[in-house]
Length: 133
Image (cartoon, helix red, strand yellow):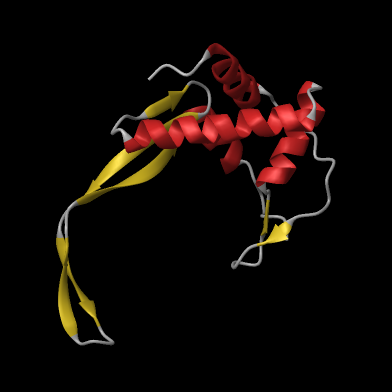
């Protein structure tokens, strides 16, 4: 699927930027007790890096996420050069157990969303010495 030129350029520039300036100190804790960047913080960072206002950055992020979700829901993969590929992985049918009801359930064959980062992305992440607490 072709993403419109504005979103494609936005995603490419975000992926190609060498370093996003970290100007926020508030992070949300996840269940693994590590800090994560929320959508709101991502919008602030995009607004700060590009100079566009936050509502426009939010609309761009929302549109990008919606396009990726809709494309994958239609059975297509999304490739963003310099960032990675959002693809669908097939899971085979299997039997499972519901231990509370003590019954066997057959889980049908289905697809799950997955992300495969590009080599440049992988190498940048491999340089991380520790996850910030």
